[in-house]
Length: 186
Image (cartoon, rainbow, N blue to C red; front, side):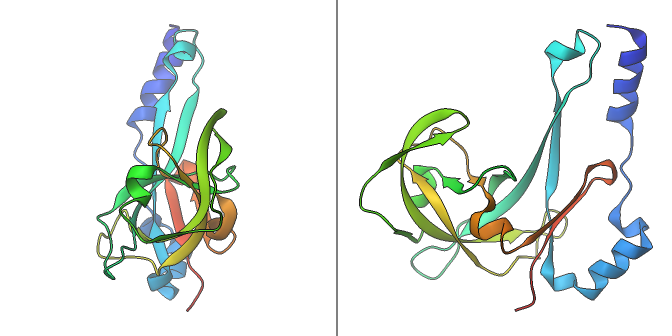
């Protein structure tokens, strides 16, 4: 691997991200709407196949900790979900939706494509909340979303656009390592 690429990678991996509270504009925005903001987190991996060829390719995901409504009026422990801004609808694996309050819009399973692979699911809905990645006591208002409730556990929790990003603002600034949801006033 060329030394120049290795140097860039070490510099990128070793950098300290600027914090949201160092920016006066963002800080004032958050203070003005403190209760309606929930911070998320990024995960980044570097593709080693490309790296061996001297090319840095980052795989970046936005992750959220979510809990789901259960039938006794409580909530599950938070579980990690991937936010997929290109996904039209959310997907919930069987081991999750079987334990939570859910409803179905259809009586039959249908084939859905997830990550290019076909799997079976029923179209339904679930209610969830987002847990702040920086302040674990900050939790979003409940949000009911439509989702494909998978017949198996072949995929993680993935939150797509419908009923989530159509109703909640996603703010993402990767260079500054800022990512959060902003909920409308209730």
